[in-house]
Image (cartoon, rainbow, N blue to C red; front, side, top):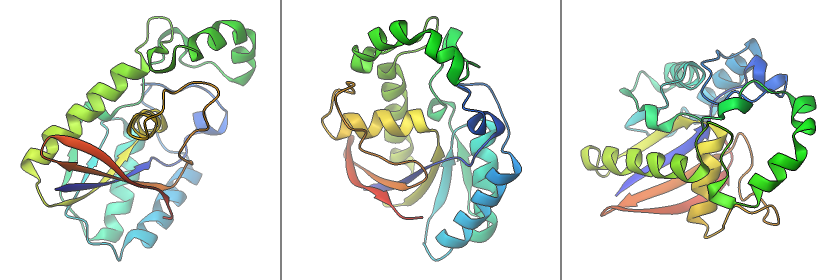
Amino acid sequence: MTTYFCMRHGQTDWNRDKRIQGQTDTDLCDEGREMAKKWGESLADNHFDCILTSGLSRAVETAEIINKALGGLPMHTDPRLAEQDWGEWTGLDKAAFKDLKKQIKKQEYKGFEFCPPNGESRDDVLMRACDAFLEFSEEHEDEKVLVVTHNGVLKVLAYALSGLEYLPNETCPIKSYKVHRIECFENEIALGEINMEL
């Protein structure tokens, strides 16, 4: 069994400004680097075998900072762990989102089929993330892997593995900036524990 300990990257300027990043390759801001440094200190007593990260800079940089405290573990990247592609909505801030309220609400009732114009659906994100975990598990059986990815990836995994449909009336099962344990065994993925403290 491969055990994944999954977390979100540190904060960026776009996070702070409440702009949709999607797959825009933004860097951490100073606050995000400080967050990653503290996480590294908190995680230093854990015995991870390696780190797996999205290929986007904000996730890689978070992992690199944490890895300094972990003693320099092997690092792997997989583009399939990138954030959802938000298509035409990429870069929009909270105010612009309000103007699209009706259009967005219509999409939200589609659950996993939610798909921004010219972007990708939540279901697409779920499928590629699951494929990444399952394939990585084949080469890293019985290992403990720290995963640094994105909020959208963590949410689709949490909703799907909790048996939810990702509809507006459902409460999001996870909280930001926590660690979530996912287990892979014999080509199956299961949710272990969510919202673990860093």
